[in-house]
Image (cartoon, rainbow, N blue to C red; front, side, top):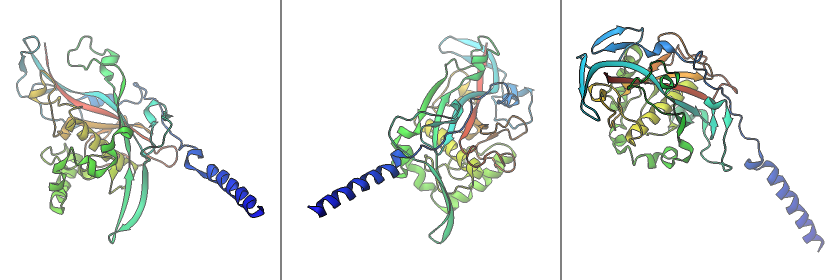
Amino acid sequence: MTRLLRAAVLAFWAMLLGLAIAPEAQAAPTCNGKFVNPITDVCWSCLFPLSVGGLKIWPGNRPDASNPGSPICACADPIPRVGISVGFWEPARLADVTMKPWCFPNLGGVRIAPGFDIGQGYMAGPSMVGGRSQSTAKWHVHWYVYPLLYWMELLTDFVCFEQASFDIAYMTEVDPLWQDDALSGLINPEAIVFANPVAQAACAADCVSATASMPIDSLFWCAGCQGSMYPMNGNIASSIGHVQSSRLALSRFAYKMHRQALAWGTMGAKGLCEKYVMPIMRKQQYRFQMVNPIPTVSGRFACSPIGASTMPPDAGRAYPAGGEDMGYLVWRKRNCCVM
């Protein structure tokens, strides 16, 4: 009986110790961030160049995607109209990129947890895999509808602005394709074609082009200096740092949204009258501007295109503890037929 009592007491204390050190009992990782100030945290010069047809009537110091050559355009749906072809860049989406599930840096660093642990992210230092040193990371993305120009009413009744309210449109924590490389192959089966050294070596050209001017859309499997677009998830096999790997995760997510028909094309002659399906994303349609932890609001690389080098413009923008949760404002190229 004494042995049974002793065993019961030991089992009781072991249970208490297990509860004390269980992951559920530990404090959740601190989520950091701040709300985006539309006046001070937005690079308003990223709106430009502003073009009419192929002519830039308000040039900027940043490269621009191609515009329709003719200044005159015509649309038939829903109402027949003839207008002027304009091109500009609009702040259309906002994105959290974080390693902490349910962490929302752009909502002030709040953590909205559903009560269960899922999809824990990480950033691991160098490790020897197959005789090679490599660093890895895993990110989550939250995608917000953020039509800032429409809210601020900079141009009243401008038909080209997306008329929508603020909304959290997507969270990768609940997406099984974002968690698993094999499952993500369901929407990007072509990844196996580009999983070879020759295809990846071509990304060097995309890196140079995106840094100097604009990315090369024909190299759609490349994210320039950041790495490969495949697999379309947040598992980064070659992580160099927070800025590089978070931008790569965001680039992959934008491509994934296009592949799932949740993001559409808005640039070029096809976008003059309406948005169109773009399953192979044109990288030239987007610019990413960091707004958390330190906003980039000036300089040529404040809103750099997909694949552009993160050195030196984003050096020092991430820092330990309080500066590891990233937020980006997504600028989208828009061509539109204005009456």
